[in-house]
Image 1 (tube, rainbow, N blue to C red):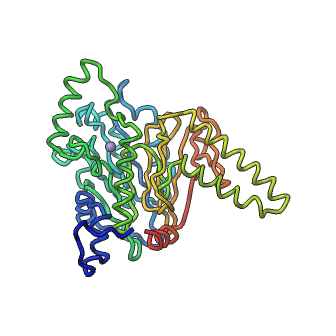
Image 2: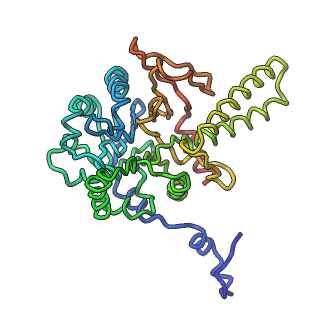
Image 3: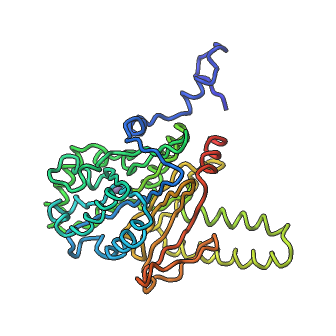
Amino acid sequence: MTAPAAGDASPGRRGTAVTMSIHQKKHPQLERLLRNAREVSLEADSRVLILSDLHMGNGGRRDEFRRNSQLVSSMLSGYYLPERYGLVLNGDIEELFKFPLEEITAEWRGMYDLFESFRREAFLWKTIGNHDAELALARGYPLADSLVESVKFSYGDETVLVFHGHQASVLLWETYPIVSRAVVFFLRYIAKPVGIRNFSIAYNSRRRFAIEKSIYEFSNQAKVVSVIGHTHRPLFESLSKVDYLNYRIEELCRAYSSAENGEKERIEGKIAGLKGELEACYSEGKRIGLRSGLYNNITIPSVFNSGCAIGKRGITALEIEGNRIRLVYWYNGKQSRRFMSDRDNSPHELGSSGFYRIVLNEDSLDYVFSRLHLLA
Ligand SMILES: [Mn+2]
């Protein structure tokens, strides 16, 4: 694998340093983020909810947040606030590509009050996304005191870096504020009248994959865990739902041959269920992003993505509680199909609200970091 530069005959220069400079891609933008991130330490009893991509608008037909607004406000006020969670709003909370800030804050006054109550009761951080990058310059923004570009949670000697994720994009209009402002102008005053809609999720799976991949490389090099949003695709330990289902089916097949007879039946049932879930993913097609193979060989659990809060069926979010990290799903029990969890978890209703929370995946942070150090 060691390939010294052509013409380099000196054996002394064949060291690790040369190899590294050939194989390690630089991610200056992400390195800068890590250096400048706001430091917050996690204690043994810390609780953090990470939500992203609310895309709040003016309450009208083009407001993508409207559908889930009741669910978000119930889960925040009825679950996370009383459970003493701190809140990180990880970018693209406001949809400034389509609406002026004043319209958004006027429409969602109650939601902002709720966000602020997290600052009073625990903490509140709001990272900047590409759809709300203008906030850094806005006057009278209600969450101005909580606005940062990224947060680094220290967990013992380890770091969990929370940022929106657009910083890894190769598109100029996603990374440079000036270009972004021109795009905002285009979308608000030109695209809207001529009927170009939903520019916000104009993500094909290839572009999504490129962003995930560079954040994955960066995290493994820096030995940090990154928590992002932006692509709207939930990731747990760097695995998408499709990756994860494949991986679990493989694991169960391995366990099958050495299992006792009664156990075999249980495994068969489980595999059938997971296969059904996988088929459902494929029939949903492109929307969820089937592209996989982020990894050459073994998976390093260095990237988590909270998904988004504008899903048709519900909302995904990440929770950190002490040494645990979880991907959770909140949904309206009246309209969602029964959600299958591989971990034998069952959904719990929030009071009698009709809203349910289920843990889709969970692990200990110690396991995540050991794996990162052993494999990256
Ligand atoms: Mn975004």
